[in-house]
Length: 118
Image 1 (cartoon, rainbow, N blue to C red):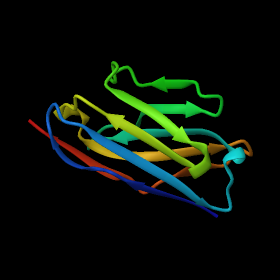
Image 2 (image 1 turned 120 degrees about the vertical axis):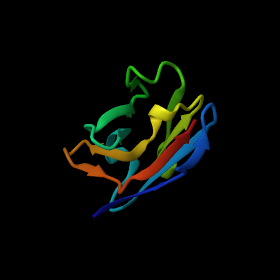
Image 3 (image 1 turned 135 degrees about the horizontal axis):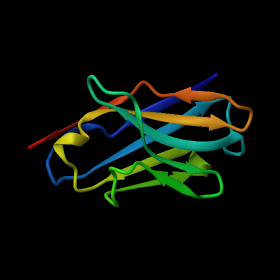
Image 4 (image 1 turned 180 degrees about the vertical axis):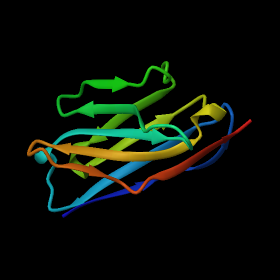
């Protein structure tokens, strides 16, 4: 069983920063993990990719990020981070951690709320 524990969400003013963390635990080792990423879902909208990082270190970002966010991972801790700067009210959403294993397993965290006030 794999568990994902997210932290770092909260309320911030526009222009501010937040850092999200997601730690994977359970019957898992870093060698098992292919991709780690973050998705978000705002009310009435579909879940969308924010950022993901693949085992070799390559990254993908949603078009809306435009250089404001940085994803990183610590393989020794099975943890993925999302540093979010220059936050906008439209970034308000529930942010979900996601990992994809080499075996094909696909796991989601419970989500952490990010609210950006104008």
